[in-house]
Image (tube, rainbow, N blue to C red; front, side, top):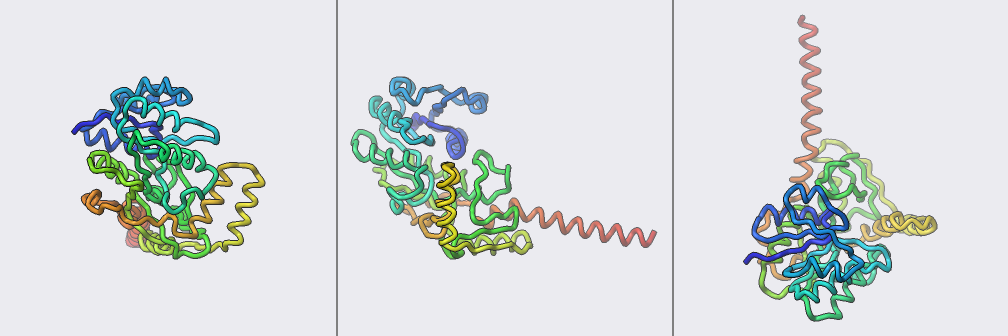
Length: 320
């Protein structure tokens, strides 16, 4: 059955979801945007400018919408998502997916970096109402972060403990912490399946691409590239010192990434399989080795070709 889906905040992972919906071609799509979002408009997508501070503005565009998916991020005190929820309820929206798209919400709950305060606020708002069905999506780290700088389709470049491009790793405490990584395009495929499933949504939805460890990623990177990685293990004491130093600067992003390094040392980013194993069973999730081979094996092959070419040139030079 065709549904009308409204996406709020179509940047980064939101644009991957837009791609998945457009590619499938079954559902009507509306994108809510602060501005014009010309890139999406040029693709023929229905982009509607909204004022997230105004429930009335949001209500106008949510008429007839079945599902709202949020990808907005807010600063402390912003009411973007609460206003979006209020407008959704006022218009009889059936289902709502708030902006999570990260680690295991069930485990970190009210903990986590201060930059996630807007998520905690939204979870409480959703729990306090019974008009719209919702689920909290956890997909772990975006596997796309393993790609070289500038190679990601829509996501920003983000530092994680293992840097395949630079053949380096700065690993918190030890390399045995488990981490679930999911390729962004696969998340889009999974979200469509979730939206089309008519059964009641669980509180937590796990989109589980692959689970690995930092040490395994280093080993895999060395195997694919043929290069030895420079690996540093950072103590918990040093990580905590980094958080203190970051807080002293007052820079919220520096504080966020220093705090996240501590989470990288544990298993909060390790996700269980979804409660209903049949929902996503048909998805052929991209695996880390497959992704790394696509992007980094070529550089090794090119290096070998260059070496062979130089040898042939030297031999021919001698013969001539």
